Amino acid sequence: MTLEEIRYRGWSEQLTWSWLGWWPIARTGLVLVLRRKVFWIFLGLASLSFLFMFATIYLKAQLTTQNPGFRRFVDGILSNATGTGETYRDFMFAQGTVTMLLLAFAGATLVGDDIRSGGMSFYLARRIERWHYLVGKLLSVGFLVSLTTTLPALVLFIEYGLLTESMVYFRENWTILRGILGYGLALALVLSCLLFALASWLPRTVPLVMAWVGVFLLLPATGEMLREATGSRKWLLLSLWRDVRLIGTWCFGAADQPRELELLYPSMIVAAAVCVLSILAVLPRLRATKVVP
Amino acid sequence: MALVLELAGVSHWYGAFRALTDVELRLEAGPIGLVGQNGAGKSTLMQILLGLIRPTQGQARVLGLDARTAGMKLRSRVGYMPDRNALIPGLNGIEYVALAGEMCGMARRQALRRAHETLSHLGLEDARYRRLDQYSLGMSQRLKLAATLVHDPDLMLLDEPTSGLDPEGRAAMLNLLGTLAHRPGKSLLLASHLLGDIERVCGSAIILDQGRVLSVGRIETLRAARQRGYRLRWDNAGAAFLDSLRSQGVRIEASRELADRSAVGGEARVIVPADWQTREFFAAAMAHGVTLQMLAAEEEDLDAVYHRLIGGATGRSTGNAPAAVPTREAT
Image 1 (cartoon, each protein chain N blue to C red):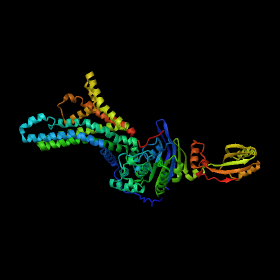
Image 2: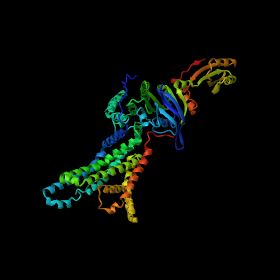
Image 3: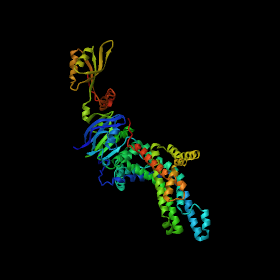
């Protein structure tokens, strides 16, 4: 066999910037998740509450335009679509359950498969550093979180503004935009770090889902029980989803819940600690080859 | 000729476990074999050569680049084919190879074009849109090779590329590697526990055992380190004959006496010194009144040399593998 027989041709052209190495990783991660049917089922479930809220805002706008006298009545009936910061914060919070389920299954595809099938060797033996891989995977997870929380909230915000009070609404409620983006960022960061850490140590779907359920169902339930038993509200910090919600409340600038915001700084510390510990837990798992001593 | 690998006093520990011990290597471009059993330190050595781990001690230069500091630059010029699966379930062949190209710094379009070319070179053009979980083992190995070759690296690090292949697939893979390994300016480090594979593709070899380099050099030099052995059969009492051989530096590996109603005799397997002449057997036999009935030369293959060097097996003689044994018989 000669090179001519296999028609082999060499290659030498300009290489792209090396810092962009995270992009193919993030893109491929998303492609892999989007190809799974289970993802579309969860996305469909996540879309239900979005569609309900979208229709509510539309209905409310139509009713109040046609009969301005109905406004108070409609506000009373459709109280979850008032266009305030709470509307969007509560919407993003309510998306939590389905986002959790979606991530529990996506984690095995995005990270677990790389650990189990040797994909890590494939990635790390190329022209990237470990941080490219880390950033690429975190962005994939972050995008999935945004797809079910931040992006629908932004669409609802735009819809509300366009259908109700037009530019005045946007001008007077710019803090809502800050709140949506801030809460979305906090969600994406905390969830992606935690998912990456858990999936790198529990790469199979079932153990990962169990661990995920432990973090987001058992820990909050334990916290609630301990709060009732001891009377200390600090036990509520065990609910990570609630901690991030507090950060979200702060981003929306809601100062009407001083009792809730008492735990804001501890919640921030918990969220930051989860991120840092997750990254530290991931680093030893980022190896190109297994060493057989 | 430029040096491809320069390792000076490289040692590496994982905690208390010493994976590599004082590795010294200076190798020129070309196909190089890396032989060692599981746990010999091959993976660690490859990780060091890829710049993925820093050696605890010593210096490693690959393609003239310092593996400690130029990891990314180095990996853009090196292609690595791991022994493990290393596939990404859910992708198809073309996406996998194109992704490898992109990860090596190629623009997406170029990577896709090059992936099509590379898969064609390796005979996978019909399977390029097939999902990776539907690839057979042989196809997976060729696909991993395509992902290694996509950016046309100056050095290919191949870890057990023939593992799990059937004899036909193995021969085809070695044939292909042999072709690719001899491209001008390109080098290949082929890690395998099968010396036959190394012998077929590589010009030189490194033998690694428990983290130490036991031997390094041209394959011909290794061949020269082979022991020459003979099988002898004689008539009459042979004790004095064997003693005479021993006194001349011949090692008697195994001997036994043969006796029936009509005659006595014996047979033995012997290892002779490097400068031994076959006629010296006849001279010794004549001097002790022994008639040689059979004198058969046995040559060690590289596997046996390897096993002898690592001190594991006692030296598997090719006498057990007739196809590979050049045997001369004289009676």
